[in-house]
Image (cartoon, rainbow, N blue to C red; front, side, top):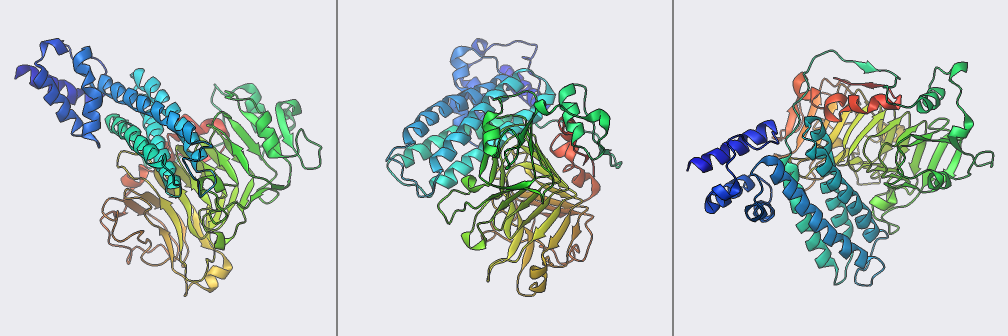
Length: 547
């Protein structure tokens, strides 16, 4: 039994310290009793969400003599996910344009294909990050795998409205693939939290050394404190203007013209005007920056909705899948109206996306913070039901969050966060914002219930920190989604909010609701929750990095 004890100790210490080196006593697989080794793998896999899938992926190490450490087990699990994902890719291509899948909502299969490609990229990037053995890359790997699990749910939601003989095969392949993704995420240790202090730091407009001179010059030009020394070269900026005075008259044409997979920021200046178009920025259009003349001056308008046959994912007026997207002084609206139900203004499923002084207007499902890491500063978000929703790791600071009058018989709810695994590093953090109501809702507040959030999925996670909460919010604060589902597994928190609707005396008594202290709240700060100091400094957008 000495060999078994050694193996267990090796695995435990590897998991705690994420040590990617084989333990020094060097017993190899061939020197271990096969039954003992199998038992050890089973013990390890019992800590994962899908033990059987875990064992199937790791038992290969017995025959190919792989050293028993957490790195190899994790990489094997990821490789199994990639292998299964390849099979799913083939099925989704078969489904495209094939009568074996009947779409009741436009974009169902397209959504699945696009999201699955992002999942494949996320898996491959996770392997690359983890192989470095650098603990700083753990947050990235966890963000990628959390986004991949979100992609699974979005695809399955769309497939619910589809039919045909190929549908069960695709669904089974999705479940098989994402069991390995979920197991892999559970194996990646969380990075050690940063040392907490009570000194709030505001990061002002500045640039780290690695941002190019060209990017600094262009971004400085669009700051408030412009001066003659910061003039940019117009040839370095793509200009969109409806009067044909720019390079293009539509934003879509400018996006299509922008280089693919750009490492440098691609600046697109959108002159004041009303742009009636649906703008899609695919995953291969990276580091796009949209700069407008003000959220009330440069406005993008669309009207797609679920009622008109689109998936929620595809209904967005502006849809961002490319990493590194930035927007400033832009307004985005979905004008479908409350009777059309889900109708998204902005959807973001690209990593490291940030918005400054923008506005997002709609009714149900206005702002779809789908996945990855996102940041919003001094933005206006308005809607009725679940109007900030999704499964990103997202921080909103100094924003106006404005509830609108819903249809008769409806209530309003601000957030619907969709975390469905405790391993996912996702949630909605609302800090130093103002929770307000439009005048017609205020006049009808006695007839309409208004809430801060409800749990779209069982591990839903949302916090309101240091924010003004208007008197229209119901004293209970939060509401259920379906029965008592998720009430003991969600995490809803409030910390030092103020205003007439901020009293916690009559808040819900759910096990998952928390009146937070400073140390709990600081876990949802920009620096802690979305690793802001590692990427937001490059945007020129201000942010508070602590609570």
